[in-house]
Length: 354
Image 1 (tube, rainbow, N blue to C red):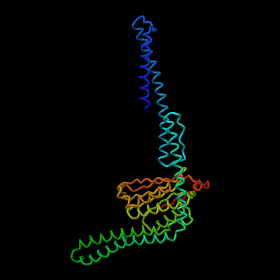
Image 2: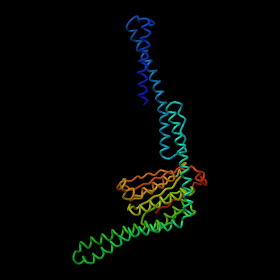
Image 3: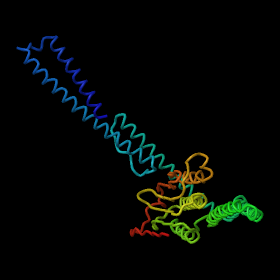
Image 4: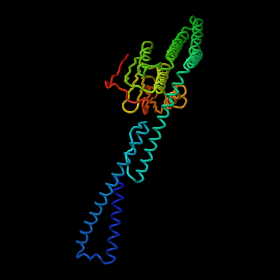
């Protein structure tokens, strides 16, 4: 943009210079040169000076405009990432300045809406606490349906295949070996389903614990039950509004459940940090990954996690590909006083690894 501005300024300067010379010459204000060499020399000097001045002005103007546009773009990128604490700088009184002012008003309204969403989420969490018994009953019914639809069918298929092995073992040994391998595979799938269902038998709410405490207990319990290397890095000083903590806890439950069911991962990592005025939750595994398309959104619980993140005014990103593992990045801005900085100044963190 700077070079284009310089080129346009040089051309405009030369045009205006030529126009002024023509007018002055037309009315006889310019005396003729004594010889052609003097004319060419003076003309080239004047043209050079005009071109340099025009280029300098174009560079200054283009740099100023580019710098303001970069500030505007930087503010928009922070707004897109959910960082609402960074104000839009003053960009002047022209069109760019008015766009900056409008973006600032949008940021303020977005901040108010996120704050309202978080207050609403906290109120919903309080209502959910009062209806805890009903939620537990509903969760048990859901788990019972999943046990019937998933594990029960797998066990029935294993039973039928085992019966078939008994009939074909003496007749067709190779076929029997294939059936035994199929039984092993179905047993592994059923085991993964059971582990995922056991994960959901955790309490629906954190029951007064901080998010980091609840997640640590969940991961320690999971580490003792599944053959996956689990590492975590959590800032234990983080204290959030109850609605946000409950949603993040359930999102982690859903993500871990999906990992156990589908990923075939051998390593898993979870991070909970507060780098600035937002919470960053990262969940990563080295599993098989998957294609991000609309069909997978339902089967992998992605839509459920997106809805929970939207309810607390956050942003979620899925990074995955077949054979490349899966990474889930969640950012939630903290605007309310309850979600303010409650660190004890020590910056304590807990790191564990399987």
